[in-house]
Image (cartoon, rainbow, N blue to C red):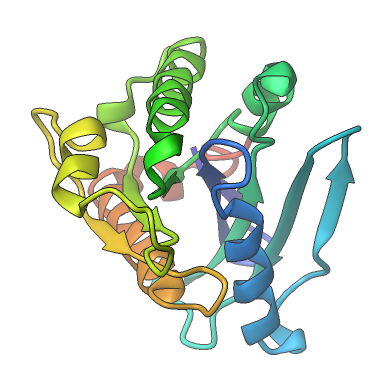
Length: 209
């Protein structure tokens, strides 16, 4: 559920980047943050654990979508990749509006990808949410490396569901399809919000967290 600020006429959506450790979640956020003008973004904040970290920042796009007079703002988060920080994953996913699942394309990371995807589903279920009800896209990252699985195999592992979602082959270190991935998930969640927005925007405080 997005946060609606009636005084500022602003709707804030929360997008969380999920995936196994070292799959490229942090690289995505660092790249996005570096390409957005300082006037349109907040600080990149890092909440470090002993061996992993969670990042977040918010930004107002240059061409922000206007919904019934409200500007759209986005807050981007990563979850820690290591399983021992699952409690932090659950906390970060609370009230999520959209998800980017970042898969590591390397063959030796397939099991970790599947485990992380299942963990995402389980953590959403603890919020009484189904993954199929949450706007999300897949990012098949590290396509520039040598020992990578074919994209159709990654699709079989992670996108073999009744509802297939958009997926993007990416190289987050150089920015290939980083913004395409972000644009896609924002469009899906905005489309979902448009279908449901009437009641939320009609009642002050109706969409607050």
